[in-house]
Amino acid sequence: MKFQVTLAAAFLPLVALAVPTAEAQPAEPVPAEQVPRSLDEVSKRSSIGCKIVNSSSDKVNCRSGPGTSYPVVAYVFPGTTYTFNCYKSGDCYEGNCTWDRVNYSGGVCYVNGYYTSSACSAAALGKC
Ligand SMILES: *[C@@H]1O[C@H](CO)[C@@H](O)[C@H](O)[C@H]1NC(C)=O
Ligand SMILES: *[C@@H]1O[C@H](CO)[C@@H](O)[C@H](O)[C@H]1NC(C)=O
Ligand SMILES: *[C@@H]1O[C@H](CO)[C@@H](O)[C@H](O)[C@H]1NC(C)=O
Image (cartoon, rainbow, N blue to C red; front, side):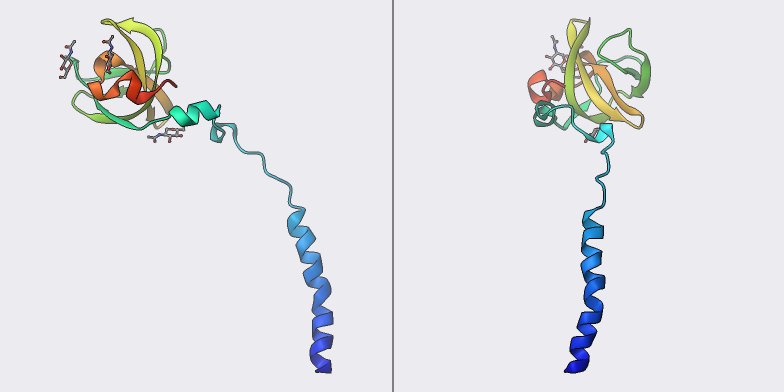
């Protein structure tokens, strides 16, 4: 019995020291790209599968923003279905002024609504 009490007393300072050390860890800043811009954006973000249609070309431009002046950063291919997350209003093409946002390896890019199937309606996607 005496031995056990002595042992406990000997280890107690070590345990007591360990707790404040763990709590004293400073918080780590969260990278900006992991922080949603607003709660609004989170609630409206969707995942809709839309096929690339209405193109006579072998590929369709995916641009860095919702307009033809934005650089082409990726391509999507007619007949292939991609997951779109939301839309932005921008330059009109063939009467369609919505640009549907899709992820690619370098970030996000936008395809004009003229080239996406009807599953990519503004209502289904929600505004970015
Ligand atoms: C675009 O393609 C869809 C599906 O193939 C078709 O229903 C629609 O009529 C086409 N729109 C135009 C403007 O050609
Ligand atoms: C697209 O990327 C964003 C972050 O940039 C992420 O939140 C979202 O889940 C991604 N969507 C898909 C379908 O991978
Ligand atoms: C634009 O395209 C989307 C499908 O991608 C369609 O839901 C929408 O009705 C089109 N808008 C116009 C004005 O044609």
